[in-house]
Image (cartoon, rainbow, N blue to C red):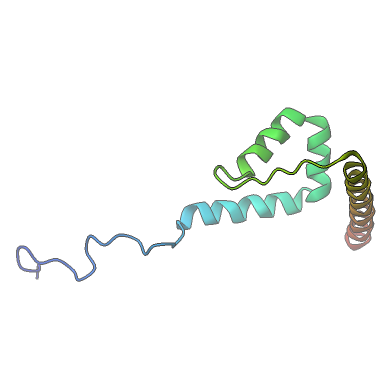
Length: 110
């Protein structure tokens, strides 16, 4: 039996709850994450950054926030040098970590 003419369900027209996520983009993100994990994860991304920098930077640009507060600091020479050295040290530590993960992944696959 059809509902009477003019009858509307109680939540009709309200749309999606504020802050809820679309189901399809979430599923696509999960698929991309699985594909990335299976193709080598961080190691694969580093390889792509070297071999296809234009495509890699396009991906990075898409992941960056569109609108946001950006805090720009200007440092004097000594502070700038110190911060650059700290950054280099963090990069070196990250590389060591990534290489360690690659060794662990290799052991797991064998």
